[in-house]
Image (tube, rainbow, N blue to C red):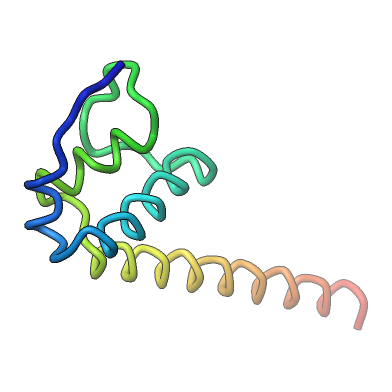
Length: 91
């Protein structure tokens, strides 16, 4: 079982409540969205990996916002291309 202390991660984020939100958001990305961890896995769970990334300063709220925005833009562009292809084929 991984044992980590979160004091350094709290210092990076600002307070323990925001740390929970940021770590949960990043852990979900790693677990569900298939995002690649920025630190070695070492058989750790996604939550521990997220906390290590935050502690090392690799992930912040701002970085997560940028990644989410890029993902939404990519998804929107992909949908736009698909709609254009459908319009070409049917109209």
